[in-house]
Length: 72
Image (cartoon, rainbow, N blue to C red; front, side):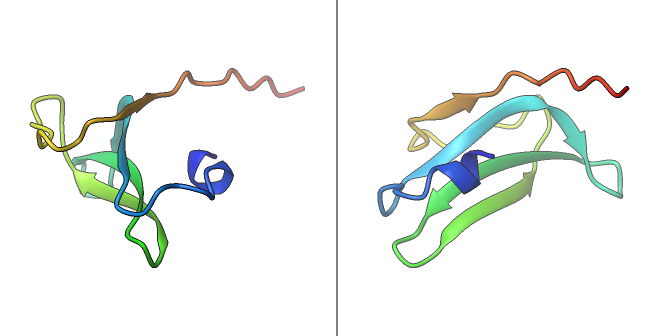
């Protein structure tokens, strides 16, 4: 949703997303970021667990609260 709604992102800005662990097919934890490299709006996934160090140049974190979806 963030990638779809943040279409005027500044070139060179990459936002780390703080979220509960999501695991890939191999079981490894995945972390996400949205970015704009000046050419393309990006949604990036990278391997990372709770001990993953985030580069110091990552100045912005986005915290998301999970929505409760109730099926009827």
